[in-house]
Image (cartoon, rainbow, N blue to C red):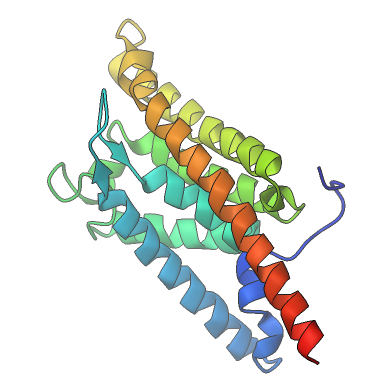
Length: 211
């Protein structure tokens, strides 16, 4: 694992370095704004994807949150998730189950509210880990995904318990049905992120060889 104090460039920072823009405040803001808006579109699209799986369909909302966090880094990921929450709060159907199960603040304060809070915390946490190089290896990616998932489920399950009562089967409703899907998404991330860094390294080596 990388040294905790050693900060690395993120995947997006490598693909679209801030130095590509002129060094002005407005251009830096525009770059971040474009990435944040693109990130919320990615999150909204992923939240609507469902894959048939037992015992419940697998959705890609949590996968998108964690992948975006690791690709963006903790600051930009946090800003993107807050923008995503703001979009949902004003009534845009960006969350899973919207508008069918409600929209706006009423939806956000329902049983899904704790998970939405977990999205913000988890994206920032895995973004911080990615800046320490955790996303560049299979093991590091797996551990980051596990930590991110835990940070989503803890506030999610706690809020369900507060909302519905701890005498109810909270874990059976809000955690155990999703384990299989999360394992599959973790395996996918373990493949995608290190592969992306490997491809970038190969591209840079090829460019260096051509100069």
